[in-house]
Amino acid sequence: MSLFRRCASVPLVLALGASALTLAAAPAQAAPAGPAADTVTKLPVRSFGRMVVDEAHQRVFITESSNSGTTAEKLLVYDFRGELVKTLDDVTSATGMTLGEDGRTLYVAVSGGVYEYDTETLTKKIKNSFPWAGCDREIAFSGDKLWYTHHKSGDCNGGNEELWNVTGPADDETRNRDFVYGMPGPWRLAASPKLPGRMVLGTDAGPARPNPSLYLLDTSGEKVKLLADRSFALPSSGAGLDLKDMAFTPDGTRLAVADAKGGHHLLNSADLSDVKTGYRPMADGSVPTAVAFSSDGRLVARGAATPGDGADLVVQNADPATGTQQRTYAFDKADQGDQVAQHGLAWGEKSGALFAVTTNAERSGYWLRVLHNPQPLHDARFAGELGIGTQKPVAGGRLKITGRLELDGPASGTPAKVSAVREDADGKHAVGEATVAEDGTFTVEDTPSRVGQAVYTVSFAGDATHRPGKDATLTVQVAKAASAVTLSAPGRARIGHALDFTGKLTSNGAAIPEGQLVTVTRKTPLGTKMLGAAPVAADGTFHIVDTPWTAGSTTYTVTWNGDGTHEGSSAAATVKVGLRD
Image (cartoon, rainbow, N blue to C red; front, side, top):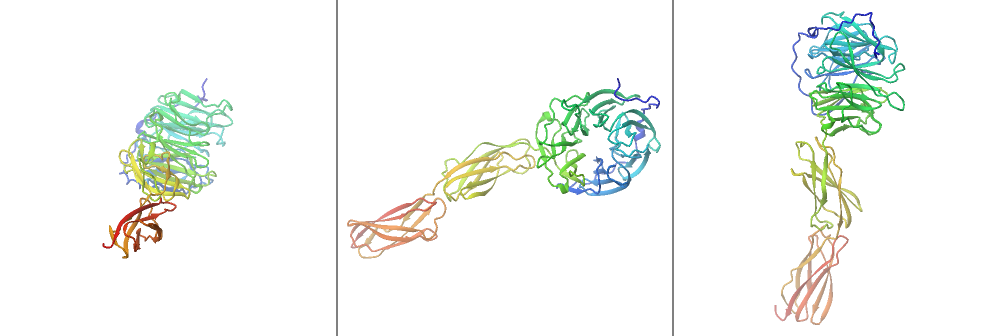
């Protein structure tokens, strides 16, 4: 039994010559490429219909939909920088939109028909008048024919919807129209130039169709044929597919479906079966809203409305079997749109720019985002453990922390950098950055200032081609720094004459503070005596003066007891005291 209601009383004429869509205008030279910086532009619309990218002229077309609450709806034209080029205000209930196969004509579905615009001059060429409909209208090219949908009733979310094709010469404002099928709607259409004679029709859920489906149609002959259909019913409710967007891969072999209930499906276009390796789910709570493939076929963009700080947009390899590298975007500003709008994704410059229309939960505003170079990010990781070699960490001493960073995929063009933080009893302290060598090795240098445990955390924040890596940590025990006393006493001295000599206190860690005291003792054949303390200068030097009164070998010992960050030390110098020098 047919899934469509066929109306036999209306002639079925499906032939439309290819020349009917050929225009004489010559293609224009491409405009300069946009800047590298991403941009966000508020759209002067109350609602959003569709977005189409014209790569040949580097323009982005955006329609205001039939839900705007006004009869002065707009067709907006932006360049690849996100700057408004032109506004066309003579469109009403503009929803469906597509480029002709030669790129010279933009077709815009409005409530009263389909308008045709010259993509070079941005002027209207033809208004194809159809019966008025206040609901969204879908259009697509398939089998060398222009197809459009038409609501029979005023109920845009239910009631019967019809599929028509258009025939006749391109300069005929009253083209012949032929009714094909009708069934409960609303519907979505998807077609690909690389899939000639094939078109997918998707139905939305509604009172008359609680279990919406996809239908693969053969549009190549005089009669439309149903080749395959696919239901996405959920066992618990019986209603599965909540269709928001569809897109073919550029080669026409696969179809991606944004399903608000079931995620982003990837299907084989030949029979609507699942591709063996599909797309991973986005963040928890994400509701898919849009999907688009880059024109070179390498990348896919998947959009959603995601609560919290989860990803609203994912860019990854179009074929998930080739890898799972992703680039994610979390839109967290409601005043710039914190979710991707339905149908709100399109690519430009092959895979060099991605255009996203974002909105807020209230649908009270819409923004055009131009995302440049949205390439998937590759993984990065710290290999092995961080190390310090044979060094002994000491307070105030230079410490070198070594490690290795592994980067998948291509290099970013600039050397990667890692940063480090030290946490000790005084809190967290930024250590600084280190450049990663070509072999992935790096050295982070620090001077710990406190004795005790110190935990180093080394991070890679990502770069143009890599996502951040998981932090690496290293715990070290910082000891007191060693100190040393050196003396410069003479070898001989005279009894009763002043003996004047100097010394210096040094450390392999932090500088020893000025004002420290060293103690001095004198040992002679008659015994040992404490002579007192000498202050240490800022440069570590100190001065000792003594008058020996005992002949024989005299030993002067200078001792420093250390402090909170230094070990103590001492040194001795022996002087031969006699009647002569």
